[in-house]
Image 1 (cartoon, helix red, strand yellow):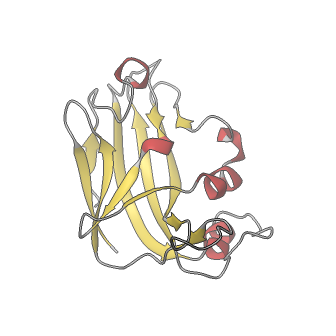
Image 2 (image 1 turned 45 degrees about the vertical axis):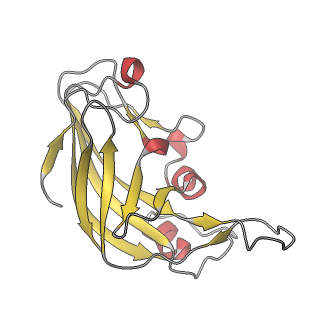
Length: 166
């Protein structure tokens, strides 16, 4: 955390379209929040978010820089956090992300203008579907366990990870 990670063409899902040459990421802060706390910190009301007071959101504040790239982007919905035991991959909570950043709603990528930077706080959460052999009533939040975990910034051709201490 705190170190600048240059992506240098490494990508999460689609090499031809992501084109991350010139992109770099610096993780500035990590904290476990409730959805209400996350949305409040982003200046957005909770607006009836389910489980608004359950601490299951991992909020990762990162500065993203683009130096000299006109075409690339970072695929936000493919970002993930691996828990310390390696058992769970926590995904971006798009419901919260789109509320906090309405300008990216429907296009879950971060594409910066050439030679610019942007700081954002990405919400990650793990939602389960309920126990087997019970009627499904929708997803429910899984509390985030504090400890060491890793932010996955790329998978190919080199996996780039950032150690997080929550």
